[in-house]
Length: 230
Image (cartoon, rainbow, N blue to C red):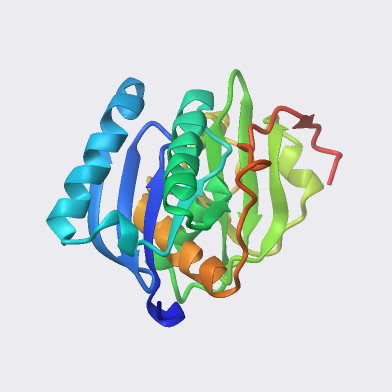
């Protein structure tokens, strides 16, 4: 195995649009997507088998399995992690788990790589006026760690930010409708996929940051924060 060109299967079923990606050295060599959220469990194994065939890769050649661990859909997170764990156990390969919000931030950074004045705020819809969110710098440093927030007209005041903030993700529409983001903030329809997970997974593989198969669980984000909590 060449650690500089690790072959990794990446699984992202955390959000309504699921995707899988086989990547070498963090670069996708094949991807499949599914837009039917209720069908992720039935879709994923057949999709992986098909993608392996299309790319000419064998399961035994994989160096690791990576998965988005949450926040996201409860069912989607369970599907993704259980699938990843199953392959890791069977193949005796390491498991890599990354936060959904950071994967989303990678998608934004790929589109705005030189906009150093822009911060990235991915939002995943929770329920009512709640979202899972975080704020990242262009270098993907977490300025606001991943957490659940109840949106109101003051929540952003508790996190003073001097730079423009880009809001995106399926939870950002609720905040946009509140019309309180301010003139220095904007919204985007950026969408992430398993190819963005692959970039982070390759870094984690090189740093040997693996999860324990027995103890790895999804990040459901059940504990909700009030805006005053940092």
